[in-house]
Length: 227
Length: 253
Image 1 (cartoon, each protein chain N blue to C red):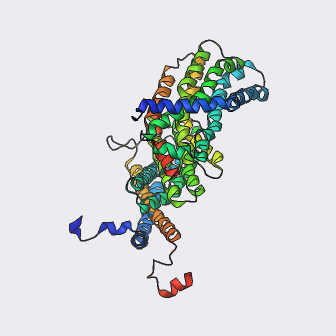
Image 2 (cartoon, one colour; image 1 turned 90 degrees about the vertical axis):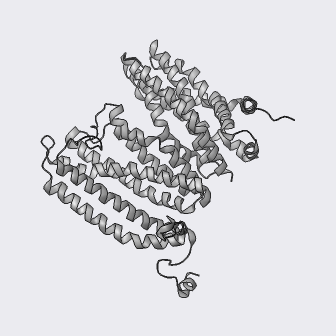
Image 3 (cartoon, each protein chain N blue to C red; image 1 turned 45 degrees about the vertical axis):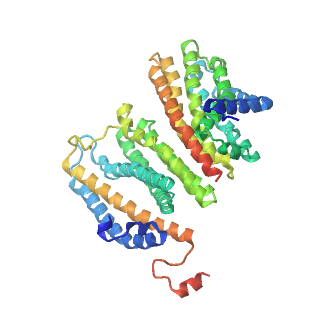
């Protein structure tokens, strides 16, 4: 039997993870529902003043996306770790970093993409319109994959530890801050009419940087966790 | 290195390093106390009062060296972590572990003195400026590294996991350093650089540099003292500092 190529292995990982997610649809629904509920709490807490809501919209929606990513990080490796699949994955001859990219991609499809697709609707709730809605969606589309990439490092480092859920938040949230600043900044700038290209470019740069380094760091962390 | 007659690799053994560190600590302590006293004297009594900020500016003699050390120590810690991962050397991980709390302390000191300076000068304890935010992230990173290490019971995994985290966080150091150039926000740019003439009085620069070397020596002394504790704790052997006598060993049992 010939060895599968790198792209075949990658596709295999993605297909398996997405298939597993489709078998547990409630998991996906939960992170979507979480985002909707948290985003709806703010107008109730802050008050329905449209000007205020428009001002806080970008920050609130971005923080919500951050939390949604954070909450779903536990699912990234834990199930595989517990049933031993992860150990077998380490033995696959293809580079582990490539397989990690596959896992992170499916994690993003499950937890990040729904938030991106939902964001125009949530933006409307906060009184955003036209250009800012587009920028919000675009910034989330560029930013949430970076969150999944960075989050994977934290998830791998804390794999199987006591209180890993809380620990991963403490490790990963500081590293999320640049993405949050650029993402929310893009929307704020477009509201102010300054143009959001600079912030979007920075988000793109963050994504490329994390794509280059995060899978590799995650692979090292996974090997350390399973030693 | 071979013709110096000293076998440097001897000190990659924790026992030998424990002894060496013990011998070096007094020297570094004395030098650091001396330099810090001199630096504070120049800073508070010799350096002239600033034309626009009055005497409030004098906090920079602590603030700037502390901020430098916070970044510098992070890089050194990451280098030790990298060496540890690359060469699988236990003492490197111990050094990285010993540096983290001192780095966190200097980061906190930089933020604290900065806010003490900010209140009279900017009129606010804290502003969400790029430099301040990235320095705050650095503090979170130090805390995260210390927390990750302490929450893993297996020493080998604790060493290696916190080393990976330290290396990942290096991204933030150039961001802190260049933040005043990249984002033109409230925090002023660097007044001292290697390539250009400093934009402040000579005595001020002297005081700042002397303080920096003082902090540097302090960091070395404290790190060595802490690494001795780490070694003693991990190797669970009594009193390497003095020649361990049989009585000590018996007592430890």
